[in-house]
Structure formats: C-alpha cells, structure tokens
Amino acid sequence: MNLLLDTHALIWALANDPALDAGARKAIIDGRNLVFVSAANVWEISIKRALGKLEAPDNLLEEIDAHRFTHLDMTARHADAAGRLPNIHAAPFDRMLVAQAQLEKLVLVTRDEFIPQYAVKCLKA
Image (cartoon, rainbow, N blue to C red; front, side, top):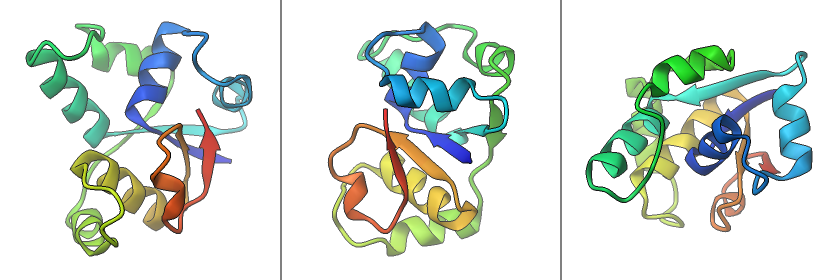
C-alpha cells in the first residue's frame, strides 16, 4: 500500500504521538508500504511554524528522511487537479493532498472529516 500523510499525521508520526491511530501507525511502519510526504506538508508546516501556530521540528526535512519517508513534489498536473476539485474543502493544502492522492493512487492518512467526501482512499490517522 502506498500512503500519503496528511500534515497532522506526519507530525504525529514524527513525534511518535499516541494520537496517531494504531492502524495508521502499523501501516506507516510496515516496510512493505511506501510512505509519501508532500511538498504541501512541508510548506504548510513551515508557514504555520513561522506564524507561531504550530510546533514542529526545526530539522523537518532531516526528520522526514530519517523516517525513510519519500518526498512527493507538487506538479502543475497536481495543481490543476486540486483547482478542479469540488468545493468541499477550502484549505488549499488539503485540496493539494487530495489531488496528489487521487492522481498518484495513494491512500491518504488523515483524520480530516471533509477529505473522505472526495473520491480518494483514506486511512484514519
């Protein structure tokens, strides 16, 4: 299974936070699964950290690499798909993650209640 972490799932996974659902934790640490982290996650974390709205590691990219997560860049194709999504979710970061999960056939690990309303496979974070 190929997973894409929503931002809260990424933060919980990096911190080994018990808030992360046991099933999601098991899927993330299962070596048979590829775990992707989007540039949108890094962008969102950087912005919210700078605004004082979020605590996250200062060495975020190194932590992502240390956990052997795979970087997923944002492309024009992803951006176009995100812009074409139904207006279920207003957050641009989440819309990008949905578009990337759809186009790259990834399971989105999230606890966001709006995301499952899109045509995207989800795993509870």
